Image (cartoon, rainbow, N blue to C red):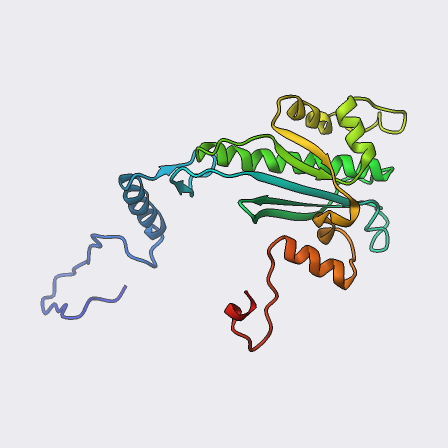
Length: 230
């Protein structure tokens, strides 16, 4: 650390400088800054969430909706695993707040199994978002999850398994419990209207643009003011 301007010492006695306050650039700066912000926000009437300590809020109210899809053995051309890709889009208050596109950890033996695993992952993501919103004070109705596979919806509503689905890992059946507890509702959506396809499939230009608009993504052109695209 360099001595501050005006600091002089003409004596032969060795001296040290003592830092009295944390400043940016020091290892402790982040914690000191966070402690100050935390105190200021709490003093101002904000509430710090238990589910995510970086979020401070006032109470709001709105609704939540989810689209989920998978592409069975969609990775077959890239490796020999035959793993399926699944995607999920969570929308709240008209905007997309969470999304992902991932390869499933194990290969599915049918499109129904791939969709069921995709739905299981989406439900876990939904519950995480619901926990945050509940702590925010939002009173949520059952969250609709839009699924385009009729066999998956039948499995959930009738709580049945067939010889082709009995091998599915038990951990994925938590979906049924959350349906019974009225946290989620699984609704049928036409394949042509499932916006989660944008995360799992190669789409035509028209379909891609339609889904892009549905999730609130705005195209930007080089040299064009972003405000002109609104």
